[in-house]
Length: 183
Length: 183
Ligand SMILES: [Mg+2]
Ligand SMILES: [Mg+2]
Image (cartoon, rainbow over all chains, first blue to last red; front, top):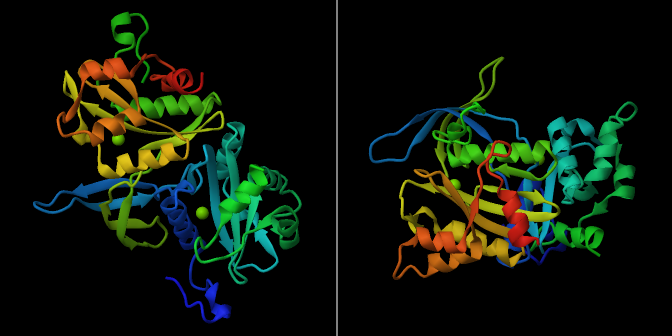
């Protein structure tokens, strides 16, 4: 939904859109403009029972959510493998590390060891700020949780990259990827 | 399931395993040995109704299969983006192109335009032969269907690469990728 350009205070306002919505819209823009091919992976589901009614589509009657073994998004940008996870918090001053799971951290390490570009997009929903944090930094923080159980906002500001909000793409994270990893 | 090594004629026999099984097992081997990080994407499902019983997992009560917008597999190998689709046929002398869908061909074009490594793995199930065919070749054949509606076995033998079957990995397609795209 593209908002009016006449009122600047709402033009870039994002209230009500989830981080996932914003990323999906941005990925569609990247795809349409031949900038990159990045998709969200489908939610993994364990299918138990399927009915096949005559003359209509198969209906899944029983299924369960499975834990994903990877991150949410991956794809290709100028030949480079791109892989990231998106998370948001309603906290104001820190990002709790419990938002991440062991298997996601493991996957990020595996991607880094294959020289993929790997990061997380963290959104502070109340202020609508989205930061890109490199996976290596996140992994270090995650594995050093004896003291801190979260990343402070200041740590994120210092070590991450604020992504500017726009209309198309809504969240231009690839311009940050270009700057941080490819320049 | 690893079969007996004493009888060579069955050691590498694959009867009953689907191409997908073989690829998944090979990907697990690649992951465990830090050769590559390649996963099958989950089957996309449109979830309509979910129940949340007390003290047990959420149950999906109504859902439908959605058409995938991409190929089956992707990931990263030595920094390179890898993307492929796997298909099998019971035909002996040709591979019908109706096995592919427009959106898959579109996705392959998009990946190629981003300089990703993109191909298909085609299996002739009756003889258990698996060939790697470059996406560019497949796209040309797909778009030139006025005359032929399938790839002849001979065309595949001439333009594709036979993948040797083994135990670990069962289907060493990355050694072909290395040879074809990276040497
Ligand atoms: Mg997420
Ligand atoms: Mg397939």
